[in-house]
Length: 274
Image (tube, rainbow, N blue to C red):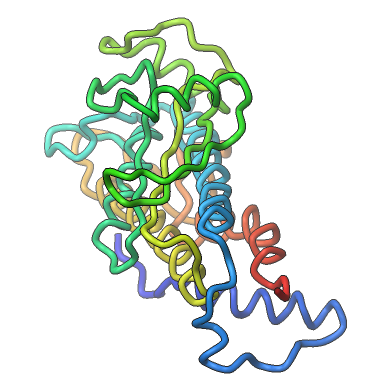
């Protein structure tokens, strides 16, 4: 299902920041074009911003779409893109869809999910990342480092079993090397990479925009799959969520919920005057 509306995280933030500043007592003078191109954020700060957006977005999708959807009889499968499979993407594959969309964008941001007990053996951490992941499992704090081989600044963030759907899926999966996951376990880590050590305001917003676009691209692809169902009952797509019945929110409604959950914390970082 294609929406006539165009989504722009940049325009959303521009409007939201203006409203936020106005409510706080006024909008500062507009920055010159040269100032928005000057480095103002470290790469670690920016990767933390986008990682936070990702945590909230994935938790919403996992709990409100996958978890509640399964209770309504909706199916989610690792082969969801195959013609003979009428299902939606599992949370890890939703993330992969976002990563693929980002990869196709002009923004040089890398994203992937790894683990020491992955369902897909190709996602197993090795080398330095495997060592750092052992620390992350204990501290649940991010690890930042520079990879000499790839010349990329890298950040790893704990990926927690934040919803029952995560635990059930991994414990029941026939290829899972671990079947005793519990809520709250560190199941893996999302890894983000970027080639520069500092970014301008414009580059920072471009990263956030590319992530938001990846989210909507993937969610729209899921809705398109639903529209093409032949042998399965199609959930009604509109303003309602699976917790209310066999419903799915539109891309607009899903994005609006993501924005409400993520925008304030990110805005506070973006509007800090350096």
